[in-house]
Amino acid sequence: MDIWEYWDTHSRIFINEDRLSSLEYVPLRLPHRDNQLNRLAEIFRPVIKKPGKVSQKVVFIGRIGTGKTVTAKFFGKKLEKYLHRKGILFKYIHINCHKDRSLYPISQKIALEIGLKIPLRGYSYYDIFHLIFRTLSNENIFILVTLDEIDYLSKRKGENNIYFLSRINDEFLEEDLSRINFIFISRNPSFFEKLENSIKSYLMHNKIDFPPYTSTEIIDILQERIIVEKAMRKKAVSDEILELIGDLTGYEKGGPGDARLAIEILWKAGIRAERKGRSFIEIEDVREVYSTISPIRIEDIKNLDRHEKMILIATINALKNSKTRYVSTREVIERYNILCESYNLKPRKRTKIWEYIKILEKMGILNTKISSKGIRGKTTHISIDKISLERLKKNLEL
Image 1 (cartoon, rainbow, N blue to C red):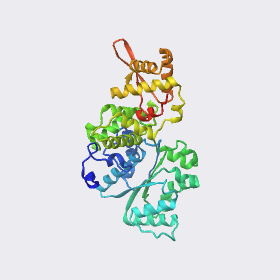
Image 2 (image 1 turned 120 degrees about the horizontal axis):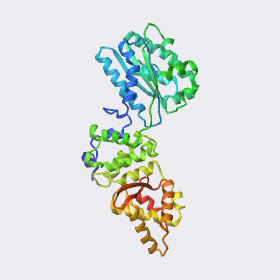
Image 3 (image 1 turned 45 degrees about the vertical axis):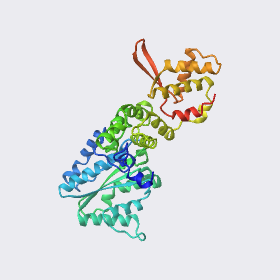
Image 4 (image 1 turned 90 degrees about the horizontal axis):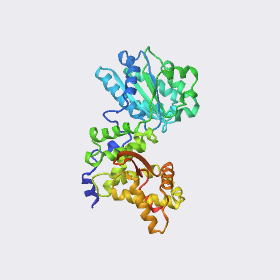
């Protein structure tokens, strides 16, 4: 296919791919973050009612992928739009301290956002902040600044930077109005331990926690991206695919509770499916993508007992045959027995096979679940979720 023809071809899987691929994208809604948004609305009510009479500083705490950044951007833009409708000049500014690690580039970025052109040399961050406040006062502007990944800033000079920012309105006050508000975002639960007591007590009052997402919450977020945001075609993604990604990443299932990771898996699985010429995602696409993001050690696979390897081969063959996420242990054991016969080996007894399955599950190679749908009562089913079946089989030499 000609490269221009490729670019002109409509995707069979994606509609708005950037709504999965872009880290900058802010969705229309934030599932399972209503509590955090409501708390923000409560904290910033005085800013809305009487702009400048009070300055708010808020701290977001949570591990990666728990919605801190997107919540800050979502809220900041909502606040900006709301105050503009009331005739108040207000601007939201988002700065990542991983990139801008000192007060100097931070002050430059704020200045640039409010239309100030600062020469590259000749000004300290203190001078720039003085000019920022003068401009805000002259043009009657209020701002909310989010300092994302603030741990990178606080590592430079300890609590002094945080102290300076927390007291910045008092430092440059030329009128009886506070014009800068802050959201500080940290992944570190011990963030407050670095601060002196006067700052700590104030900031802890406005601390908002972002817990890791559960598997159900992650499924809701993915469905929102597909159905509401129209990132993908509905027919490209089955419920089974979403459940698998939810199980791999959901916190209560042993995953990190990382929605960003879940979105990345869905996006890359879609790319793989499209590359394979399909209009839908298969389980193997998710396995392959996940195995590159969170790989199982190949060395551990190669060092398995011979019968453990045979159980894995039997499971792989059963899964390939069924094209489903789970197969019954009965089918795996039947295939294992046939495999033993082909190698002239005596099959292990059922209790020993169960022991092997549990070892493989503890290693994270296999997953098991109990179903009560069988006629004879409860049935155990087996899946391989975290590694591509092809990649796994290549490393199972008997």
